[in-house]
Length: 564
Image (tube, rainbow, N blue to C red; front, side, top):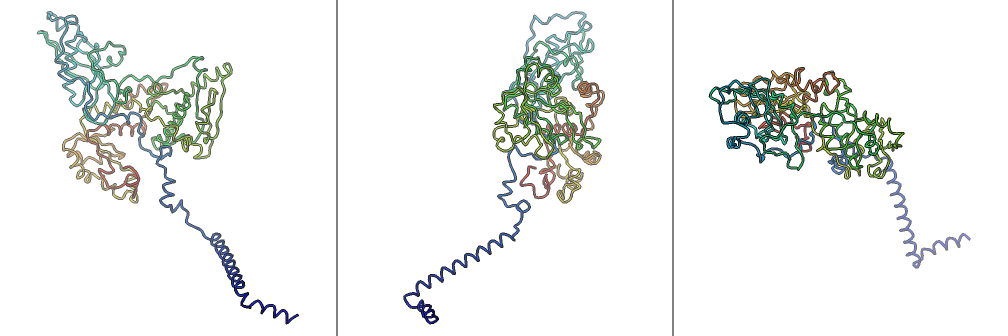
């Protein structure tokens, strides 16, 4: 058997069997290489630790994680832009303003005035509505305030005595980027002589004609109306009486309404920008669903804006934003008022509530809900409890934040208008940012030096004319730091105008009344808001970044990726 076995194996090497043997060997070799390759790949896959793309991102992953859409919130402590900032600016002369020749060409009609001169002309009571007096006051105003365009004059009314008249007007500055109309009302001192001549001998300060403001129902006087903005809607008018009181609604109107409310969440006590980014998401969803947004009119002001450096509850939305305009332009209702009415009529009228506790339930899925109230309830896990998360993802292309509906408080803008008026709307402005950024040399290596007085004098000499009035908007607490600039310019700072918000001011009395008799502090956000708005009304505007320093607004190497 042994011999047969050897013969059998050697027989396999016979020439006719060599081809089959070679193929078998090649097949075995290939299979062995395949098995070895799988083992090597498995070992590498199990032991290899690649760099985390979140810490070392490629361009593709960076672009993926960095959204450029409106739905991604970006923290920012600056003053947020609101609806009036996006109106068409008044960069060119708007047709329809009243000039001096319009007044000079007016004819006096016999029905409203007598051409005869009475012997007691200089002593009899002054008729402020006499066309001669009216036209004289208009002419005096146009001649004195040369840097504004007048668009409408109201009929004069009697002032505090027999020699004064109050008159109101609407105007815009001739230069600047504001799209708003402004209202001023002043007291005119009128002189009359025995030869029957009338002259204006004095014009009071901004808003000195108190009677002109209080009289709401006046017959229209000489006017050229330019009431509509380029977008076909009423423009912001600063200086009108603000009426942002809450309005009660009837049981029938309440019960037939549809409502949306956001409850809880982590947006409270964040920056104003964060708050608005979330609030406008809620308002956008309410408009998409054709529902009234139930909003909390009380805010928690972040510590970054307070003198106490603590978060402060109980701030009123109306201190900072124009609730009257919002109420007229959108469907909103105060939360306290809503719950009071809900408790009265919910059971009686069979009103139903639809609860949503997951922000991923999109507005599109709620479009068919028939219940009276949709309540979005947010938890405590950040950032999933932020209101703005509702507007991310697929909702982003459906629900748009209605920024155009939100305007800044007209009470604050009235302070802005008063400051600009005291400067005769003829000033340049410079924004100088220092503070924490100037102390951080790693991110802003040149900012402190570039905003020093000597550097500012060198930089500004090619940008501003000597002798100009210059308003400096700055976060530098010690304004005497900029005293060297007084050698070339007449400088102005916000605190020069404290009388506009002190206890004797209109702002103080109106906000105290709004706050149930409790005085309101002129807080940090109000200061920055007014400072910024006065800056924006300057004829020339010099910014810190780009104009004064080459440092990037958001730190080293961010100039190409962030707006300066």
